[in-house]
Image (cartoon, rainbow, N blue to C red; front, top):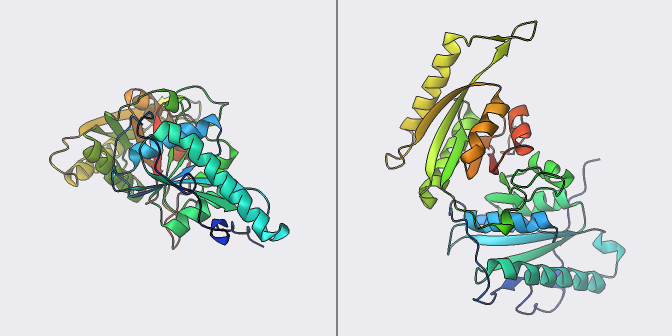
Length: 317
């Protein structure tokens, strides 16, 4: 049997919520988020009140299109609604939505947002189910407290969200909420594959919306002989990467004037190194999707999702 889908929010089973519940208009004097990108119209943020949730909220608010995007904060309650009296469970959902609203308002200030607590299922199932139901453009998750400050490292819930999400997924580095970040440089890996070209297109949209500098990075994969020593790259492989970068550049707006870089080495390692001075890294997932577009992590994307030194955005092709 397959995994049981998460139940929808039960807030509708009770009288309309008070103003500080599912739709928030926080006080205008509160702190404002610093990231501004504006590439997504509907952004869903996983929020469970751990420090990584606030990092995700800051990144999600910045990537949402200012003034037009819908920002949805999602918390998943454990247990199944049918096991508890409907009215009682509906009250628990409303209480959770109000709690999330209070905590998020201090970070978002006057930024409008919506809170939706989901009853039942695992946190990962709930986030994926709501993202599909809401037709979200982006899911944003935080990093676990076990990872180093400034780097991304999703926890167990984040790992499950990443592998099979119905839309792009962004991972906020640990400690982002404590800074006032600026989106000045967007780095995207490109090898000419379908998923990498989709990543380039999305990275260009983010860069253009935020006024950031865009860098296209082509990696000539390092090969090793049987003794473990590196071998010179085949000229045909170098030419292939150069053609891929040229093709990607031709498809971009002339106003972007992207920087083009070619590096040689182990893909995940050299991309992570190149992202050291980037504010956002964008990578594709992998090419086998079936009938639905989903983020199915390949080895390079999976390694970067656990080690990149900046916010990381993984997109399906």
